[in-house]
Amino acid sequence: MNYKKYIFLTTFTCLFGIAIFFLISSKVVYPTIWPVIKNNTILLFHDWSYVVNSSLCFEKGYDVYLNNPCEKFSAKFIYGKILLYLPFVENNLKFYSIYLPIIFNVFFLYVCLSFFYVENKISYLIISSIFILSVPFLLVVERANIDILIVMIIFFIAKFKNIYLNVFFIILTSISKFYPICLNIIFFFNKSFKNFLKYFLLTNIIIFTFLFFQKESLIKIFENKSLITVSSTSAYNFSFSGILKSLNDVNGFIILFCILIFILFIFFFIKKILSNNNASDLLDSDIYENRLFILSSTTLIFCYFVFTNWIYREIFFLGLIPWIIKNNNNSNNNLPSLLLVLLCLKFILTTLIVYIDLNNLFPNFEPKLRFIKHSVDFFTLSPILTIIIFSMLNFFKKNTYS
Image 1 (cartoon, rainbow, N blue to C red):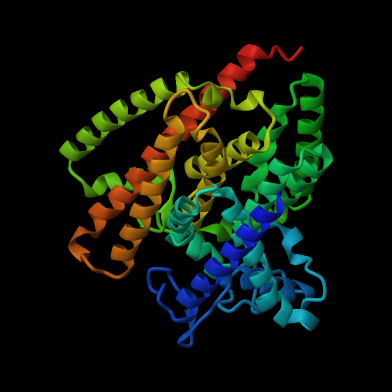
Image 2 (cartoon, rainbow, N blue to C red; image 1 turned 180 degrees about the vertical axis):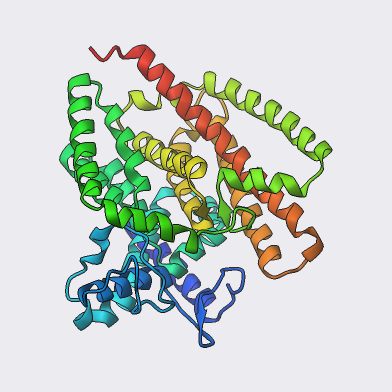
């Protein structure tokens, strides 16, 4: 990274950091950002505090998967046991609960702002503002959810090609929050079948060994998960089940019309993808932008179709931006530009719909607005899934793995 770029990103990190601090401290973001409240007090960094307080109770000898009195709402623990081994929590509670999440958020903001870097400062400010001041981003910062750490770990895996470091990070995140097991896709960049198999098996044997010795905790996690899972019909939901449930809120004609539009939409993007070598050959070039795109899009696709997610999981869309920017001027068609416009519209609409929904501006139209939100999610993810599918097909076509 050159000196000017470092200064540029540091400056914008400070500016956006101040803006986010003002929005949260002045309570402008509430109730659009769904606050966690106890005794009329908003609990800042609640998701991270949940981990810290659970670790405190675990340190005191509690089985936090069954009984977690140190947590503000006595909520049972739902993450991997490794997160309960934070050292010296009781003696450093203020550091863990306040200063550490601030540090996490600053580094997270810096990493995300680096995704949008372009020479034109006006373009940079407009594009970055759309994503950084969106509901998914503000929510994950306000809650200090562990997903901010996973975004940064994905950044490090994409940036640094040290295979053992990659293996370590995938194991660490997978036994902490489980869904990052999909990051195993990074091993496809190794075109030697012997090495691919070696690292894939090594990583997953270690992961499943850890999980095997935690099987009792995993059963409890499965039982506890429903206690804090967001409703599929909520505007705060990001999942395939969301659009399926929201179909009940619209009539058959609208559904039929949306299916027709989707068919035309996906055929349009398939044509663009097939004529764009940079998109269909993502796995052929082991560079930072390609690695970040593959890791981020795989995480999005895996979580969207397998789990019921809170809206902050949409922050993984930001990992697609560096590839889009890099290929925007080097592409043989306008696919990158179309993807950027699609992502910008998605984040603008998501923020607008959540604002209307959480502030009860049009209560009679809320079910329809939620259907629009879930439809936009599905439409946005579909071309990304298509790119991954064609990349995988082309990869196996070109590489015999002998």
